[in-house]
Image (cartoon, rainbow, N blue to C red):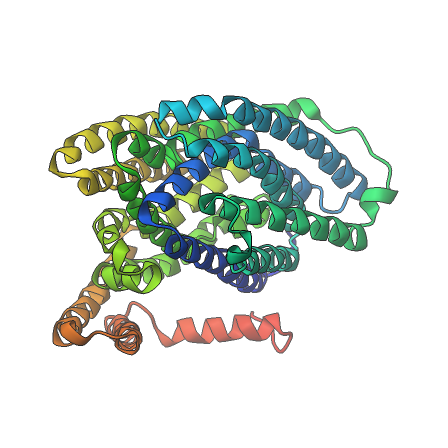
Length: 505
């Protein structure tokens, strides 16, 4: 990559990423909250189980195709004929696999509902088979624009999809003739179909070379060699990501499943808040290891500065988040949420190192790590659910949460070790110290603040506690030299360069 600064491009992309995050995660949590409030915890649990089955098959159908396309298009960014060839090849592959997997779900929906002994699951799985085909196509088209470093299109797509499904869910009373728990999936299908049309028109207007340039030969053997390990990772990842809900569905009642889903929604929302691995991916394919090492040190430092206090703050405010978002009937969700909080730190770091290793063409390393982690996760989920179930169904969800955290921690540790051994990419554990100290000081403030207003806690007091906690954290961090004026000056200079007012030397 010539001598251009990465920081301005990265921060600019990060601005788009945050907008996309607000639209996707914010829209997702609003959609989930509306559904949870619309349904009882039991019906919400059935919907959650159906969606988890669909998402498992969706993960299988991905087979690393989106990520592979991003890599190869990023590497051929100046060769439009090659970009077209990659796009067409991956498009055909994607559609063929989605059709097969969707058909499998359609055929086995009845059998799956019998396995869980929940007949109300059957119609949701039938509808889910269509969602399984439609939604990934929307994401695939958006990934093509992402590979072009065009995050604006991702923002536009997220705006269209999320605004549509939220609007449609508000029309629920007009569809009283349809099973209530099936409506969220139906509305999501309609929204995704319209978003696909939007993406197709956007690509036609902005990347017309896809339709004009001639295709050229591409090294499919090399693509298969790279993608096969991502495929293994993708298939193994399903055992890592959705195992908890699928196994819980067999052990506990649908109400407890609904509580766990509410807790995991908040945990995943917060853990993806500062996940920047995918943003760095196009840059990582073009940089030397020396520059990547420097970039990682800066990125990890800021990640820890932001994620550590977020985890501590959520620990104190968990029940208020649950009460505000999902209503009082979902307060038991606080219990499994506590067990999932470490994911706020673990997931962003794990994604960062996974994308780095894949960007270097070593997807076989991540495949091995994910396979073993997935097997470990299945073992831990079954073991800990069985142990904690003795204390009650809601504590079985705690066992599932702990299992997910432990398996993800193992995965992160393995990726760190491989990154250091194979690429010399070191991790400075001292970066944890100052954010932990400042978070401890912030926790003392939150403890006494919440104790003082425990009997009369309102939304306004909740906002004040968050603002007060943030102020105290950053003041403490500044006083112990966790951040300095240099950080603010550097950030200001980057922002000025983004808008063309100055250059960073």
